[in-house]
Structures are given as structure tokens and as C-alpha cells.
Amino acid sequence: MGELVARGHELTHQPQDADVIVVNTCSFIDPAKQESVDTILEMSEFKKSGKAQRLIVAGCLVERYRGDIQKDLPEVDAIVGTNELQKIVAACEGGQSSSNPFEPYLYHDLTPRVLSTPRHYAYIKIAEGCDHPCSFCVIPQFRGKFRSRRFESVVMEATRLFSQGVREINLIGQDTTSYGEDLGIKDGLSQLMARLARIETADEKWIRFLYCYPNRITQKLLDTIAEHKALVKYIDMPLQHASSAVLKRMKRGSHGDFFLKLLERIRTTIPGVAIRTSMIVGFPGETDADFEILCDFVKAAQLDRLGVFSYSDEDTSASYQLDAKVDARTIYNRKRKLMAIQRRVSLARNRRMIGDEVDVIVEGPSQETDLLWQARMSTQAPEIDGICYINDLGASGAEAGQIRRMRITEVHDYDLVGDLIYTIKVSPFSILANSTSNHAVPHL
Image (cartoon, rainbow, N blue to C red):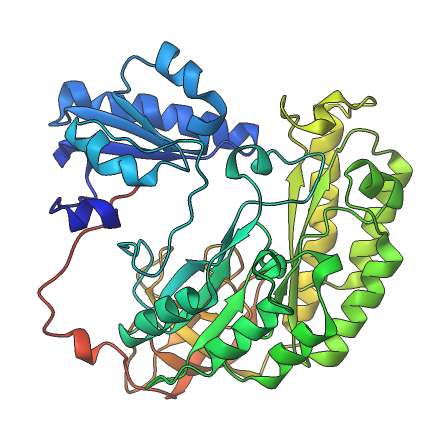
């Protein structure tokens, strides 16, 4: 989007108004592939009923099925893989590009960007690719070897985003905890987090990182998070399972007892930390006993957030060749049981928060009802965790992007309800009030 806007193109939310439609795809698991294909076919109809003259398919689906898309989807006019982002302008304009689809791509602080998030938070990718051998994962096949962005490039981008009114930055990558290793930087992620925390801003800021590997979490990193107020007390650490037998087949290693000790160390170092993880059920060879180990672990771990995924048998993954596949009904039932356990854990933890006063970032009117506004605590990552519903905005009202104080009055399984009690910081967007630039962002 940044490349297109820099070229002078206007972005639109509405596909019926677009001259060119770009579908950005995912192909990590079967549901993502199906959604991508369905969206391509849906958008192709606007070449008949709307203004669209070209349909572009971009992203990971291109990396896995480049030839199939070109052969089986004649509606598609051009494709842009994950290493060909600079080809997007030529693809949309119908020209030719000399980009190399096999040359690893990684953007930097001077790469044009258009934020597709609300303007009070943003994502920064600090690394691309992955060197881990997880047998269920196909990401390294089309994202390539792990490579970090330059340290100062990340700092400069973060500084610019904060100056534009962004209050919350989320660092992402396939493996954020390996940041800087390929550049010879020791404790790269902890150094980067400490440097970002020291960026001077007019208003309070939140900084978090996502997707860390349990065997890469160092005491130095935990100490850094605990030391700086701006660093969100939140650890997103996909564990994938707790049975040593399953973890061995996943080529991740470790076991539930090690994870419990790690969780204890994290909580001891960072008081009030929220811990999120994800688990896979139905991995080939997962027995009833393995699943019970996982259930017992979730009960013992008392995790703040948990996502559960059904194993997806991807034909190019190493796990595709494994025996003892688990049937779909068993996978479904195991997922439901594990989520039921976590639902009870989450509700019990939430109930202990009734009456607490917490900092929240105001998101705006609720998507569920016009009668409520919504917000998030710093320990609720955007787009993935639960949210806070605001019953009472207080006498001063509220604006999206404000960091406010909320008293929790009611809780649900994953969400909280409360009242705003006073403003911590003024709106950070006054400097943008006279801005004439207002590019719409398409829904892809």
C-alpha cells in the first residue's frame, strides 16, 4: 500500500469502486488457503460488475502455489510473492518488473508504509524468515532463512511512528527472540527493547513483542521487560504442546515440567505479567495419554491467554510424512475440551480483577453495540486477546487512542467490563488535526 500511495494511487475500502483489486493471501493452514481462494473468486466478480480492470494476488499463497494460480485462475492478472513486494506498482499498472522472486526481501525504515491499523497502534516487523525445524510448519519454505533488520532502522521507524501519534507498537517476526543473532548482536531483542523504551515521547507509550520461542527467553530479556515502564508486561510464547513425546515429533523438544518452571521464572521476574501461548491438538501420534498431559498442563499453568489450533496436515511439511494420524472428529473434540478448561481458568482469573483499576487504551465505539465503547489493557494484545467494554465514559468523554484509567465492574470468560474514572493523558492526535492527508485503507 505504501508503494502504491507513493506512486500516486488512491486506496479505497470498497472493491466495487476499485480499478485494481489486490488480494493479500495466507497459506499457512487449510482454512487460510480456503479463505484466500474464496476471496480471490469473490473479488473476481467485480471485474464483471464493478470498475475493476485488474485482479492481483499477493502473499504466501503465491509462494506455495504460483503455478497453480497461473494455470487454474485465469481471472488473476498478476501475482506478487512475499519477496516481490516492490513489484506491486508494475503489477497494478500492467507493466513489467525486474524483481527477483527468490531474493530474500525485508523492508526498512525508508520503505513507504500505509498503516492498516487504527492510528493509535502499529506493528513493526523486526525480522523475516525462520531457521527452526518445526515439523508442522511450512513458513521457512516461503519466508526463507532468518534475517534481522538493522538495529537503527527499527529505532528510526519506531521514533517516526511515535511522533505521528502512535501510542502502542507491537514488534513481530517469525522468531522475534532470535533478533540480532545474524548481525552478531548479543541479547539483540533485549537491547532493542531497552532502546525503544528510551525513545522520548510526549505521551505514555506501550511496546510489546510477539512470537517468542521458549528456549530463547533469557533472564536478560525478562529483566529488561521488568525494568522499563514502557515495555508491556506481556509474554507471547507459543509452546505448541506439553507432552515430551509430541514435542519431539514436532522437532521442538522440551516438556511440560520445563515450561512450568519457565512460567514461574517469568512471573517471579515480571510481577503482574500476562502470559499467552498457543497449542496444537491432533498432531500425528498424539495419544489420549499425550492429550491428558496437555490438559493437566493447562490446568497447572493458569495461563492468562490461550489459543488452540487443530493440526493441519500440510503436504509440504515434514509432519505430513508421519504415521498415526489423528482423525478429524477426535481433533475437534480435543480442541473443544482444551478450550473449555482454559475458559474456566480465564474466568476465574478475571473474577479476581473485579474492583481493580487498570490502564486501558481506548479503541472507540464497540463493534458489538452502539451502547458501549471498547478498550484494551496493555496485557491484551490487539486483534487476538479479549477486550474491555466501557459502560461509562465519565464526564470528560473519551477519544480513540487515549490511555485512561478504568475500574473493572464485571467480567466474562475472556472480556472485562468497567467504567472510566479519569484521564491519564490527553489525546495524542492534536498535531494531526489539520492534516489534509487521509488515504482510505482497503480491506483485503
